[in-house]
Image 1 (cartoon, helix red, strand yellow):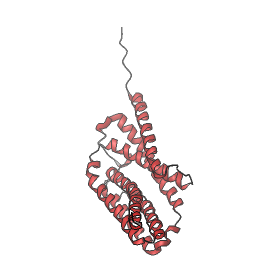
Image 2 (image 1 turned 45 degrees about the vertical axis):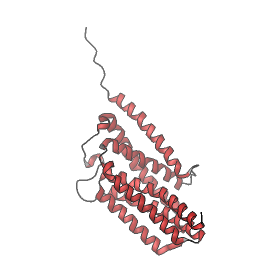
Image 3 (image 1 turned 180 degrees about the vertical axis):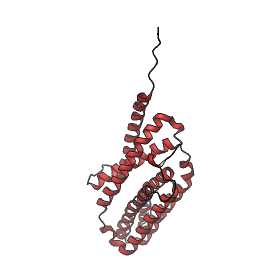
Image 4 (image 1 turned 135 degrees about the vertical axis):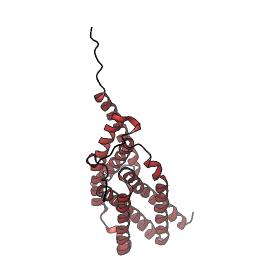
Length: 242
């Protein structure tokens, strides 16, 4: 391959990994808490990202990403564990048929107005992953002297992955609420654990691939807790009277 082809392919694939994480967060939050506030938060994240890229340009790589990872990771971990716990309880109680009710006190979206939880989660997810994509573009493009090509590849990755996510949002929204809350809780908890520890300076041996290992770990933990919860709520057998 030519040097241009290498820059194009490498930047696209690396950016696509970050874009998948971005779209996963937006898709999960939107399906769980509603799309209006989620898309507003995502749009605000992209707007701030565009301002930062326009103002700073190549100097964007000087932004300290570590503290932002820790902040976003901690936020995702807090909300993820909350939804993880509620998803376990609901799947244990109602099965995969799902809990169908919703109310604000139970952590779901408000009946009207802006859902600030959805807004902030989508905003920070888009901003963090967008900055990661920008760093990849600047690093590969500036080093190879092909910044324009790298910008094209990074933008194409975000657009394509975003379009795939948009095409899937109706399918995801049909998942029963209890199961969806457990899945989204598992996703947010996994991303939150990864980013929070990475922001604290922990070096993951396999990079972003270790998110998959965290998903497996929390998924198995959820199955174990569901089994324990079902045993706890199972009614005791009646003792026959003589």
